[in-house]
Length: 210
Length: 222
Picture: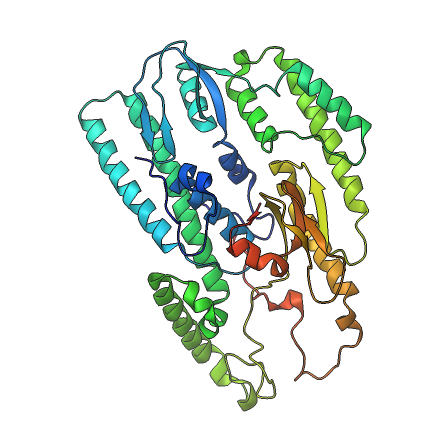
């Protein structure tokens, strides 16, 4: 049910990131009539045939799976826009193109459930993959350049899934830099009585649940 | 049925009128959940928010039951149930993360004013947990150790502080985003370049440096 993702790997599991993405709004065109929905997360509807309306992504997918609507792919999910974005990504080695925060999850969900609603889906899909690869490669390169006692790292326009994948590494790496560069480490006294337990050791040893 | 919220809980303050109007409780809960996951220490319990969500969930459960009986079409019922499931997941996960943190740092919480961030039930839980753990360690191990080493809290009587107590590491790095430009910020006292926090930029910084901003709601942990 409310499963606990193992905090030692990544704060949020991929499913949890998708969960958050599913609240993004998207446009659908219902093919039936339905009364407005007064849900805990908001009010949606009324649903009238052929009249477009905005709903959260999870709702859109649920309706689509039951054949009750078609989904209008978001503007950025088109061959044109994606080709532009891909070229821009390739041209600038340090700048990330502003893509929707949840572009990975949204495109994945739409590919899985709304294939017929996306024109040129094979092209679109391969463009998204290419964009993902180029961006990820950029992330790797940019990360290699963190050195010294970085107090803060700034990256603009990273997407949710990318942040989540990179997080455990970056956090650990920055932590290690911090620890090893710390001036306190250098003149540390040896007496046990004075010893402030090291940063890493304050965590209780626990059997990792598998 | 989705109520707009007033000031959501004692921990989060929303200072913009528009976001006050348009933020649902579910969104506030999602934010609290994300923050609780990302932050290394336990955060203020959102008592009022949890209470409201519980009531809304209860209402919704009853409504769904009525729907199911009165023969409203099963599609609608299943959509309401999905929404209910999602909200319940958030609530449960939120409470579980807190319990996880309490279990991990229980002695520390008892000793400091982090105690005030717990709800009543959490406090009872923490107290019982600590007592049980203490008794268990006492009986199984501590009583058989040589005299200078019997304490639950200190490694030995030579320790000046309670160094067997695990503490949350406040200088963990976290990833965060601010909604508006917050100007330049001195990150910590050991000197170092002040950092500019701009709207929409993702920053990776030590949690300790931005703690007050997180609490006042100006920065979002991602």
